[in-house]
Length: 126
Image 1 (tube, rainbow, N blue to C red):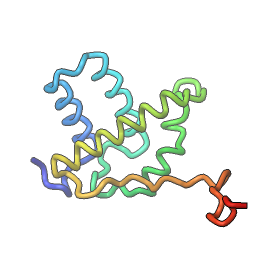
Image 2: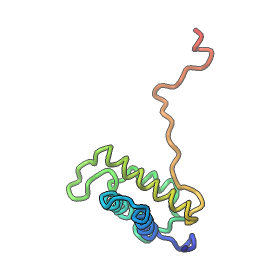
Image 3: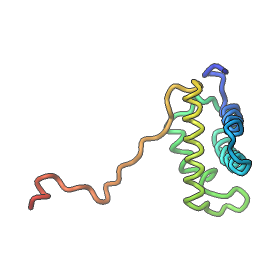
Image 4: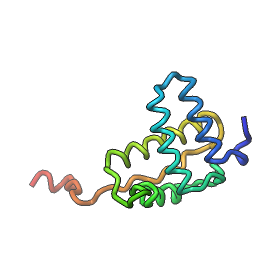
């Protein structure tokens, strides 16, 4: 196992994909997860140390063209595709944590929608 400070995102992605192969995942899954990892590497760079990825960096990735647009033509990716890539990124980070490569998950806090706040307890009874 590489020490935490030495593990790059590219190394982690490669080892993660190898672990999926060892777990018997289909070749199609390996291929599509590999494409998702390419988007992560495009944004963060292959030499980005896992321990240096912070929630703020992940939040920026979630808003980046590397995730939201197709590189070849600049068209918007579907929300389904974007959500799958986010899921793969979270799975990679969870795997890295389970392997001891990172101590905490650098995931941004979810924003709470204030569009329909629940009424205060006393307002419910009116």
